[in-house]
Structure formats: structure tokens, C-alpha cells
Picture 1 (spheres, rainbow, N blue to C red):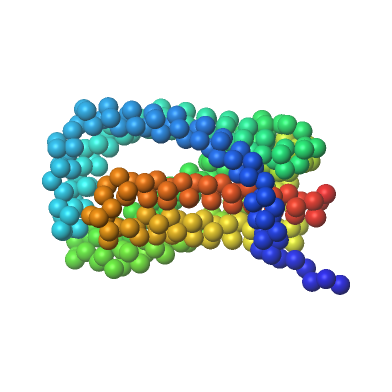
Picture 2: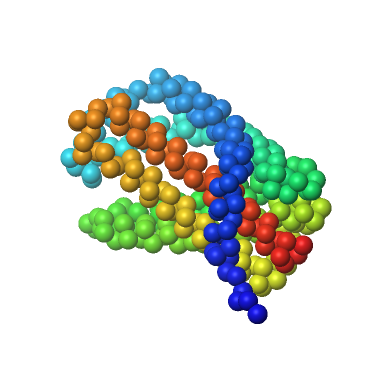
Length: 295
């Protein structure tokens, strides 16, 4: 008998399959930027309005001390406290609208993408929209808990009455960031597989979430493995994009500002395209495992 195939081994096959069909990552990129372009435009317009009301000079940003990180940190903290009421006022109406728009567009986009992966599937975007909204809520809770934990590290190592402990704060920040990133990869798989279950098995959003916890030990292990590997891949893509953007810095005087801007744009483009590609690879892997275990 053949040895059981691990989830990571099957991903190599799915990578080549998706690479031969560039229309699938293009569809993922299209719906993402259909949301991102207007959202970034609104953010830019609001930033211009806030900076016009409170110029950077008034907030002390024009006098940042790049030679002294502690002084610069205090200056940035004071600037944030000045801009914070304006940011909160914008976030109160912008974030709910952005979450609603993202849920709708991502539900439509993922439904179209899954239908391209499996043409026999019905086009039912509404359950996918609800599941994408639930995924976004879980992400928001995870990020809020991470920020709260980093705030605790800052208060106990920097904001205390004793001498600031930068090494301890950095160690805790790295540890907490990696822990929350790993926890997200390990715990978010039910909402990642739920849209597939809703479409393949003609279930409602709530029924798909409930069924995602009843997939069996072997199927669940494959999903967790793929989710964890894709989280590591996302970290690797971030590192590669940072290397691409930082590599020409020693030659910035010879290359000029325009060349550096082109390199940074290339790094961002690489990260976005590669991230969309691996997202489609993950969905394809989920589809194949559903066929193997439940199809």
C-alpha cells in the first residue's frame, strides 16, 4: 500500500497546477484590488484632510531626531496623541463601511474563484459573504489581543518607573508576535474551509461553520497543516519583499530616488502577486482534500 500523502507534499502538486492557470491568481488579485483601490483612495483623502487641519509641524513630526531612537519614540508618541482623536473620528465610519465592502467583494470573488476551480459548483455568494465577515471578525479579535499584549509588554518594560528594558521589550514583542501568528494559522482553518463546505454541500453559513468542526481527525490535521505551512510561506514572502526593497539601499546615492521608488514598487508587487498565488494554492489544496475525504 502507498504511504499516506502529507498535506505539504500535495501542495507541491497544487502549486504547479495553479501556476499553469494564471487566470486564477489574476481573479484573486482583481477582487482584492477592486476593494483596495477605493479604500486606499479614501484613506489618502482623509489623511490629507487631517494633515491640513493639523500640520506635521504642529505635531512635532518635522523635528524628529533620527540619531536618538528614544527621543524619536517620544516625539512620535506625542504626535500620535495629537492625531488620535482625528483618526478615531474617521475610523468610526470608515472601518464598518470597509468591513462591509470587503465581505461583499471577497464573498463574490471567492465564490467565482471556487466555481472556476470546480465548474459544477452553484454560484451562491451570500453564504460566502457571511463566512468572510466572520473570518474578518476573528482576525480583528486576534489583532486586538495582539495589540493588548504588546501594550502590556511596553508598560512593563518601558513605561515602568525603572530604567527602560529595550531588550526585554523586544524579546516579548517577537515572542508574542510569532505566538499570535502561529495561533492564527492553527485556529483559523474552520472559517477557511467553511466557504468550501457551504458551496460543495449546499449548506448555510452557520451549518458550514458547525460542520467544519466535524470533519474528522485526519481531515482536520491536513487542514491545520496546510494553514500552518501557508502562514510560514506568508512570513517568507514578507522577508523576501523586505530584502528586495532593502538590497539597493547602499547604492541609493548612485541609483537615485526614482530607481529606489521603482524597486520598492517591485517589492510590493511581488508580495501581492505571490500572496494571491499561494492563496489560490491553498484553496485548491482544500478542494482536493474535500474530494478525498468527503467527496
